[in-house]
Amino acid sequence: MPELRQFICVVCPVGCIIDATVEDGQLLEAHGQACKRGIAYVHEELTCPRRMLTTTVRVIGGSLPLVPVRSSEALPKDLLLQVATRLREVVLEAPVTEHQMVIEDVFGTGVDIITSREMPCARETG
Amino acid sequence: MNRLSCDVLVIGSGPAGLAAAYEARRHGAARVTVIERNDDLGGILPQCIHNGFGLRVFKSDLTGPEYASRWIERARNVGVEFLPKTMVLEIDDGPSAVAVGDRMGLLRVDARALVLAMGCRERPRGALAIPGTRPAGVYTAGTAQRLVNIEGYVPGSRLVILGSGDIGMIMARRLTIEGAQVAAMVEILPYISGLRRNLVQCVRDYDIPLQLCTTVTEILGSERVEAVITSKVDGNRHPLPGTHQEVRCDTLLLSVGLIPENELSRAAGVAIDPLTGGPYVDERYATNVPGVYAAGNVVQVYDLVDDATESALRAGRFAAELARRGPRDFARAIPVLPGSNVRHVVPQRLHPDSLTDGAVQLQLRVREPVEEAVEAQVKDGDDLLATRRLRYVRPSEMVTVELDPALAHAVERAEALRVDIVH
Image (cartoon, rainbow over all chains, first blue to last red; front, side, top):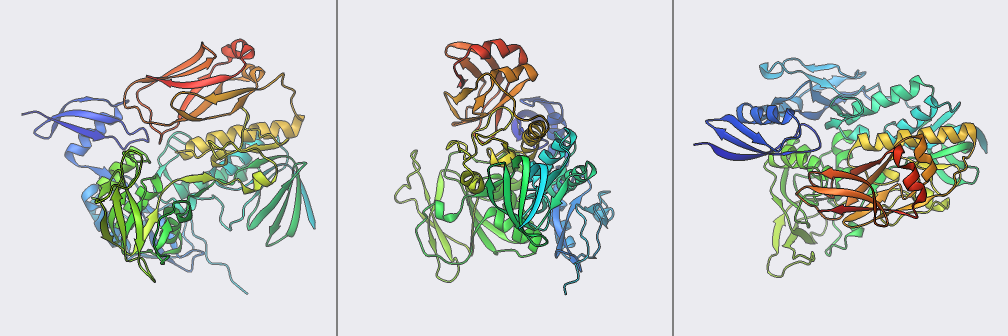
């Protein structure tokens, strides 16, 4: 039996409400999306939902104690908290560059975790 | 007192200040100086470590720090000068500014044009009148964001979030990722006040319990927050008797709105629109004070950084033009007024003859959401000048209507323009 399901697209800030007809996990029909990325989003939600992960890792000797990190692309949603927990154990040493590799191919997903800003060494204080 | 002079002085190095400074240089201002009170450039961006920035401006999905570093690099590449760890104390006629900094001490900067880009502040607990004790553990969402993302402290282990603004929803997700528990997010309105995508990717994805038409009516605890009392509210936002619930928590975060930061502007004689909380501006983002422009969240609180950036590019361009050529003589200015279901409109006044230079965008915010097709109409009395069809309108999402240069003649005859949202 086809069922009706509603999705809010997260691809851009518009947040289209998409009414989808779904049968056996397959998308049959969709209405309400302003662009075709909405269809791809619903399809992904039905098969393997993915999200970007952004968090921080600790830095030793940096001008700030943390550096922000991001996934190079969206990760499977059910892995987000595991990856975040793993990142709590990571400690980098300053200086850190923007887009420095933190974990390559995290949990075999093909997605890398990289820094999203540089973190210079703490300035010597007199 | 040390003395400096420049063509365009920008106060604040957040997204608006960076864009205004960059564009002022690109439009021929010889010396452009940005004063920033923080050590770090970028304003609020370094603590906004989530993605979603720059989708329009850079056509890529960047985090806040990445968006900042791209603009800092752009500004440096065109020769913008920065004075970090320096705070403006006063703006005087000229325009000119008095500042104090760690390297130069007390300093006067004379400029041909000045751009206000101080951003906005969060509405604090004091503005809400929540009864109860004054324990530790009450933070605005943005303060918690700074503690978690910059300083490395998670401010609590079990939290309640009051309000459903974007920073509140983003912090619900962030704190969950950091191992804290969000016991409840409560919103007094029947709809969330932030973007819907954040409802999905921050609230639902992390099973945050969201209660609409609900508010916090009391804070309990002596040394530290121990619990809050929540209550359902009626259509007038008054708590309903008998609906109160005690929610155990050690921390309360407030995500209840942002206010443009205009203390400096007010003291300088800049007239403030009570509807936006920002200066009355014209289509060039000029305020009523000669030579003083306003950019980004100082003008009105934008939903998206891309919008703040684009408004600031325009302010920077016209500030540079003033610095190079001096003030322009316009025939007259007409008011642009909010009409039916419109809370405010920017710009608040328009020089009709400036339309011949290019299209002007009217930016408005609605009072009430309408989840069906509506039309935004720009009128002179009963004459319809411009319209835009919209699939829906929501208070959380700014609406824009473009005035085409072809309308110059019609607008020249107008006494005032009014913008309505019509079903």
